[in-house]
Length: 350
Image (cartoon, rainbow, N blue to C red; front, side):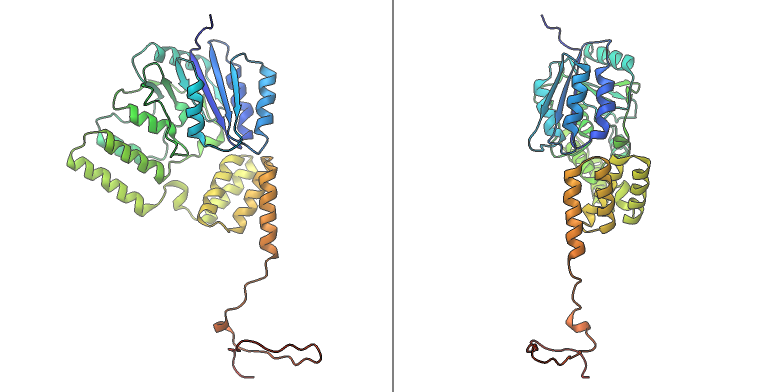
C-alpha cells in the first residue's frame, strides 16, 4: 500500500528560470521523510520548462509531478489546482528556496500533523486574533511573512476554507492565515529555509493591505471604536499610495534596479522596473533596463517584442509644434513642382 506522504510541496513558477535550479535541488535532495512535489509552470516563455524537465530527469524522484499551462492562470489559481492533486498530511507552498533546513522542516511538519493546530508559521509576531491593535500594526508592516513561512495542516482545515485568494498576486499565505486565525492561533517555528532574492524585496501593496482589512472587518466582531480605527487605516491607504517602492521617485527606483542588474539580482530588478512602467508605460530608460534584464534572464521572446517596440518609438517622427506656438512662417517659392498652400499661417507677417 502506498504510504501517505508527510508533506506535499507545491512549487509554481512563471518566467522565473533563475530560481528553479536552487529551489528544485533543495527539495529533491530531501531524504529523511516521505514527500511529494507538485510543480506547475504557468505558461512561462523564458525556458523554465526546459530547466524543470532537466532537473526532474536528473533526480528521478518517484513522487514529483509536473504540470504546465498553455495560458497563464496566476499563482493563486495554480496553487488551488495543485491542492486538488496533493495527498500529503501537510502542505507547503514556497515561492523560492536558496537553502533548506531539512531537519527543521521534518520536525515542524511532524509536529503540525500530530496537532489540532491549523497551520504553522515562522516566528515573526503574527497578530492574535482578538487584538485589533496588533492587526493594525501588522497591516502597516512592510515585511509580511512569505508563503514559504507557512505550513498548512490540511487534515484539520475545512475544504471550504483551504484555498488561496486569486484576487491577490502575492502574500497568499497571509490572507489564508488571516481567515484561519479566527479558529486557531499558529504553531510558531524556527526558520525553515532562506529565500532567493526574488522574495527578499517583496513588499505588500495597498491592494493586499485593503484585502486584509476587509477580510478582518467581515471575520471579527469589532466594537464601533475598533471599526473606526480600521476605517481610518483604509483612508490612510487612499492618500498615501503603496508603501515601499511607490513613494520613491522613478529615478531612484531605476538607479536601484540598474545596480541590482549589475549584481546579478535580475528578478527584483525587473520588479522595480515594472513598478515604474506601471506608473509611466512609455518611460524610455525603464524600457531599456527591462530589455537588458529580459535578455539576461533569457526571456528572448519578450525581449524581442520590447526591442521592436523601442525601435518603433525611435522611428516615429517628432511631434509637430502646436500652431499657437509658431512665431514665424517661412514661404519658399517653387517652380514647376510647387503645391498650393492649404490651411492657415498663424505666424507673424514677414
